Structures are given as C-alpha cells and as structure tokens.
Image (cartoon, rainbow, N blue to C red; front, side, top):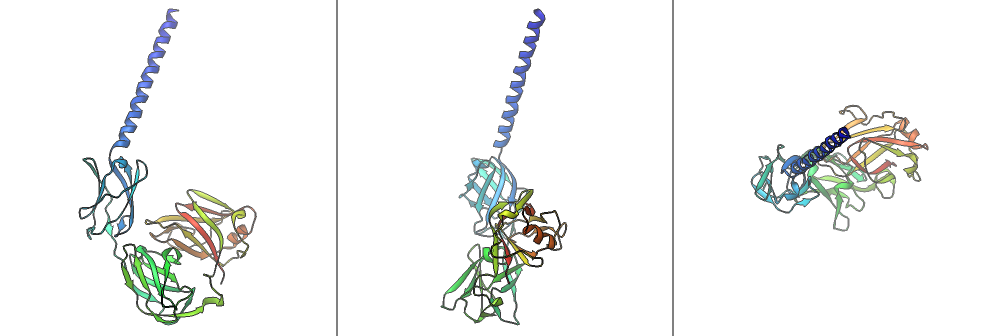
Length: 334
C-alpha cells in the first residue's frame, strides 16, 4: 500500500511538472508572437501607389510604417498578427533603404532593403506596319511592371482605356498591349499610366481599324476555364472542369494563362495529365518549370501533344504547380 501511495505521489508530481512546463512553453510562444519583428517585405522594388506587404510578429500593434527618406504611413491594413499592407507614399528616397515599423514606443527595422522603381518606356514596336485590332503594341523599357493602364485614341474622340489585366504580357522589361475595338485608325500616340497616376506618351505608331484574322471583335481567345485557384504544390485540374464548347484543344495551338497580379517573382510548373513535360520557354529550372518575373501576370505558349490528349480526355487535364494564383485559361482562336 505504501508503495502505491509513493507511486501516486510521484505520478502526480510529474503531471504537475509537465503542466507547468507546457504552460511556460505556451507563454514563451505567446511572448515570441508579441515581439515586434519584420520578417519579409514584398515587393522589394516599389514606387508611389504600390501596395507593400509586410510579414513578421507583433504587427497588430503597428501604428506607422516609415519608408526610406523618413516618410511615414499611418493608414495600415492589418490582417492578423503576422501580416500588414500599406500603400507606398510619395517622397520615398530615390536611394532606397530599409523600412521601420513603429508601435507604441517600439520599433523594428527590416533586413530587406527597398529600391525605388522608375518606369521608363524606351521604344515601341512595330513601326514598319499598321497594328490591327487584337494585335499588340509592344513597349520596351525599364520598370514597366508598374504600368496599370494604356489609353488608345477612340474613333468617337474619347480615349479607350485598356487595363493592365487585359495586356497580353506585362513584365519589368516589356509590355504587349492589345489594340482594342473602336480605335481611331491612323498615326497615334498611345499613353501609359503607372500606379502613381503619372502618364507617359509613347512614340507614334500606326493603328488600323481592321480586325486581325478577319474576326468581328473579341480578343481572338476562347476561355476554357475561369475562377481563382492558388496552385500550391500540385493542382490536378480535371478535364471535366474545362469548358470546351467553343474550341477543341489541339497541339500547337496557343494557350494563355492569366494570373493575379504579383509584385515578386513566382514559380510556375506545368505537366499534362500524364506528367508529360511540355516546353514553355527557356530560362527556368526546366522547359516546363519557369520563373514568372515580377508583374508578369500572363503567359502564352504552345499546347503539346500530351496536353491536347489529356485536355480532351476524361480524367486529369493538366497538373499545375508553383506558387501562383490562376484566374483564367484561354486558347487562341486565330
């Protein structure tokens, strides 16, 4: 009996000790989450009007974000303890630097340094022919990921606004902008606008009111999937979710993926439904596993034989990986 009592006392002591340790451990975690700290800042290249996302701990206490040049922002969007976002203000130092989070007498500085973008359109193409409706005005330059709109002269005297979400391509070094329906034919200067509202008048090009491919409107694409899906590790897109009522996928057709806007490079990997590796482009880990540049919100490439087969099948159409959110998949019709 005495042995049983001693055993029960030892067991009770052990349980109490474990509870105390667990409590201390929980307190330590809670305290760590309360420490004001900056882990990441994205994007690291910014300009006025750009949304900046900051992750870390203790951020729910943040009262201001100080940008390089000692420019403070107090309008902070808070999403939980570890995530905030702010709009880049005017007057940020052109030399860049770190940002500082301030919170009730505390402060935390980012390890990452910001650089300041400055959109600079340098040239346009083509200059040797008319650009038809649904063909692209090509713009080349620097920091073009900050461009949000393009203005084309309309035949009714009013500008036609093309939002960046409808560009064929948007990357830091180039823009491909579809010439829209309703433009005024003849010599024209397209105007670009960045996220701060600043406008840039491009060199003159010649616009045509003829529709490329002879179609009567539209962008020359058939949508086969629309929604909003973040790929994560792997997304097994079922063939049953594709709308093939307007077009049948065939090898060598052009397929277009549209993504939510991203201000930092993102990975994108694509296989057909049998894990075959179609060629997207060079410059990545492999031909089917690439890096999308910051602001490259659209991607076009040729459908492979394997893709055509599995997209027309009854099981998995495509297997998609990376860290990107897809909103639309289209196939070019002309």
